[in-house]
Length: 326
Image 1: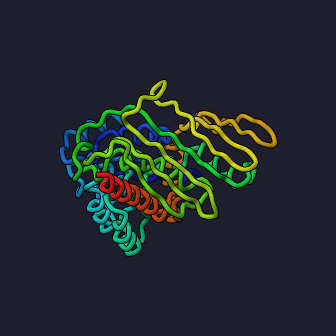
Image 2 (image 1 turned 180 degrees about the vertical axis):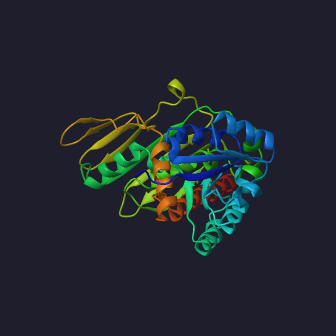
Image 3 (image 1 turned 90 degrees about the vertical axis):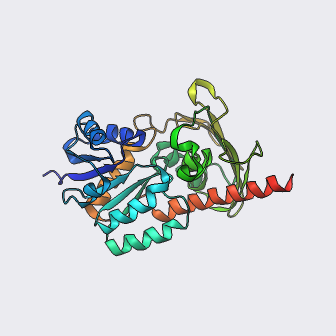
């Protein structure tokens, strides 16, 4: 007997909703999708385009509908907190797009509301579910590389910023906040525990940054770095190589997760998996089960909060360094 269908309503009709709709279409009748926008015409267009179950002309209408079990907050970051709290008040599970909230401390308020509602908070951080993330974690925890000394993560590309991403109040931060949150999660959750972090802004400017270097120290030893940029071209629109160095071996891997070359006691090629290289299908498989069972998601609120705390530390220390050089 097939499990009952899960009903989700997207709040906001933009790029994130398009991406998630494409993934959920492959779930077939297992997931019913509704679309809500501040303009009913937009919601209706998305509903027809992605073969949804219905459209709503306001977010409040979607959250009030008894057919909807969970909402997907896919609006700009400055509205995430308000909509998440409203959804919990309406008795809905919440999937919130990354970056989840403007401040790490917002998670404390949200988690209290989550507990009162008896529903679950899920953060759409798909890099948590990427095959390369699992492969790196298994490699490091196996001890095959020995004690890790350096973890160098390269995530540079040329990407145009437009619309609300140019507004500090709406976006909440620059490239590191909006896109780098993915890579911060990978840096901090690959089998090594971050003890401290520091950020460096190469252009030493003000306003929303487009490039940042983040340096972390791991508990028990080892140093990690993230070179993140939206203004540095990379080959073939995003191919980049990252490295892990240990006392018994090393691993070179394409940052997106196409392949890894492991050296040490024996040399081998690892292909983590291309079918779900971005982790979106695995993420939604997890989220659908969370709605059905009420269990905790793999991407916990605590993990997402820790990622924002590291970004806030990087921004603060980078600003302190820049002020000290003037």
